[in-house]
Image (tube, rainbow, N blue to C red; front, side, top):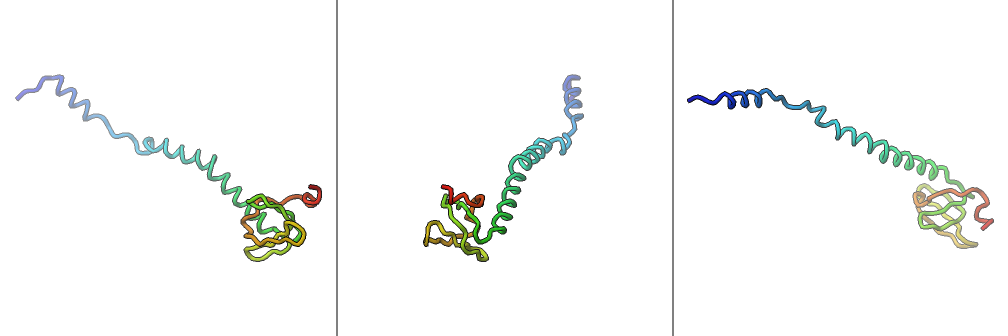
Length: 111
């Protein structure tokens, strides 16, 4: 059985193709991960580190705002809880992690 010459040339050309380099194949995925790391993961880790430092530096007399929006003055600092005075003789106990930010001294008196 004889094959036409065009068929033989087409088969030879198809066999000559090589598989693409695996690094080139995964390069877009790797670049996407690098972009996500620098735009999303790294800034979030930085914010978490700053929050941990802020929470560990809490001390009696600091004026804070909680995640719920409650502002008050720190009266007592424990291992994982703090007591915050939100009004005269009104104190609440909450987790240290619930503190959103520490206000400058005297902020609560001026409002």
